[in-house]
Length: 203
Image (tube, rainbow, N blue to C red; front, side, top):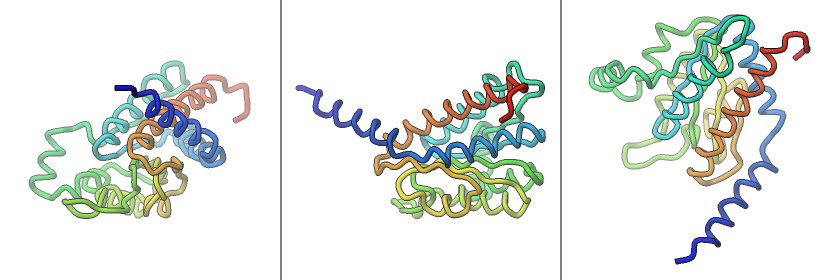
């Protein structure tokens, strides 16, 4: 079986995303995170499914890759990482509260919440509307006077409307959106490392 046609079409889709994605939205998102680092604010990252692993990866990059030579380090936390707490919250409070419950205790004024979501809370499946736990967490972050960043796909959903800065991957494909979210988090981390590591240049 030949796969060349599928491969070509998939990679053409990636190239199309590169052409269409908003550079100004990327810049605004980087600036929000740079200000969080500069002001020693915490960054909390959340996501479901594949976006949960992207959340862990991004928090790790902020804490290690970006911060390794910085004057002071990022304080970044992926709220999916404490499995006993996540399972206890799911069991006792419900899946819709797994992130908002944590943020009620952790989030302080000026902290940043990064929500990674393919649909941004729009659409539904057998369990009901998607990613309502992310939107509930966003509400808590806003109530606590924090900043919200969204990495999204499709039409951006409610997360795009609620976020202070957001990057929407212009694609209607979950694999393409999730894959490009990793490209974006690596791009953001690389720029932050450069901006933080050379304070002689104005950002």
